[in-house]
Length: 107
Image (cartoon, rainbow, N blue to C red; front, side):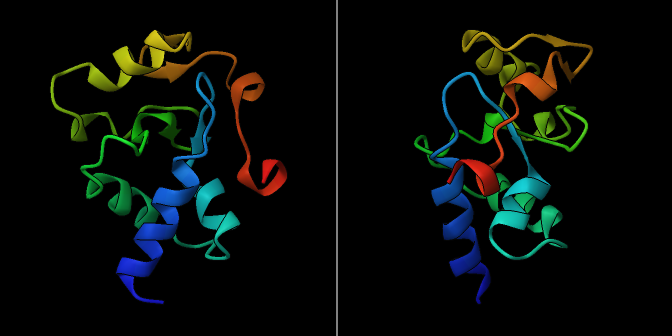
């Protein structure tokens, strides 16, 4: 699969993450059958530049906002999550297990 095809599949899955929920780069990679490609999922989201791709809802496996430096403005990722009711303290999603959305189970 080309990078472009993989990136498009990442965007399709990311677009399905429900409002107020989050998932991880690894969960998306696992769902796409590319379990060792969590970093590639991050690159795809960094290159999305599409309003319909809610990249702010994708965090690392521990619930940390590791991709926040790719958003314009210092706290845009956190602000977008908080506007959806997600609580973030020190770049860490609170109640991560409760709001985690696993595409492998949900789709």
